[in-house]
Image (tube, rainbow over all chains, first blue to last red; front, side, top):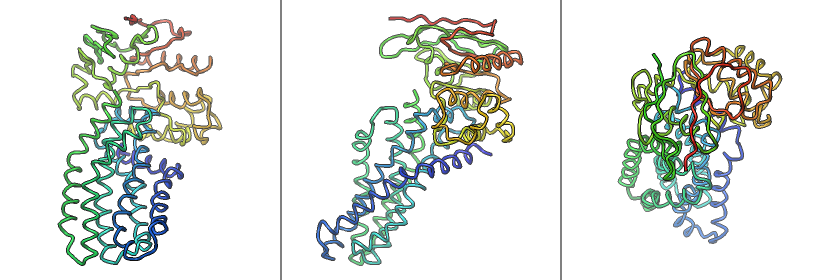
Length: 221
Length: 211
């Protein structure tokens, strides 16, 4: 078995052993979105107006809850050291870890979001725009998050630092994602915003592997 | 010819030179015992040898090439077993799974029967399927040390305090295995605060604690 396939298999098996950690961000996401209609009142217009922003803010904040899990356990147990000593590209192995983290923590979120869109009275075009922005935006969150987690994993209690490092980086994503959904609400084309998010994703995809590898190397030091 | 060479290694931590100008060759069939007080830099030296830490000066050569080169690093990794302070045993996975994950990561095709045999040798009979989080510290250490049995292609072992948490019988077993490995041409560099019992031949490298 190639070391890459082996790592993916291990990551998936172990992820599903920690069900509470896996579900925690998802539950947070659902709770925030169900509480909003109660908090701001059930007026359909207001909900539709704030819906895209609420969903995206909840998605970003819930991602921070589960982000540390990406490298923390393997760093503490010493598995990252063993990965660095296997006959494989460390960059490739770390990218697979990011991929498996995205699969278990963001894909459920993308799947569940249409249901939540109903709670916030989103219309059908808005719903498609939401799916598109989440599909393109969440891998971006994972990749950028992985760099910050790699840098802070060696520090005890790096959680607050992680949030401070990451939130400013997610602001452009938040702006373009909510703007895409708002355009969809007004029946306007939202292609340009999606294109910008896609461009952000591609740039990150090209550059982040090196940054993640370097960040982890610094932490292993 | 020795495969692993340390040339003029210097390590500086928090403005304190842990050691400087450390050079040695690790010869085949040789056991090198690193000794020194706590904080003398034994672990740092071992981590420099594995490539986790870049030395502040000097270099580590594997078969004549510096291990900072990625191709050399991978060639080195094929023949190395490293067991550090952190045992890389996942508490959620069983002893068997931990061994399987490690073997697969190292691209070893170790049949489960072999893994069961090794775990039996290490006194973990009946505990193969128990999550390692429920095992004792010594038993977790044994799961980590099982790796010394799996990788037949290894020629270098780097062991950082392998005897931590092990009982007398466990230490004897590992010492015996180290002796057999050296007799077969392997080289071992390790640290230990316990005196070696059954091993008679080794080379000492002592790191002074500097202020």
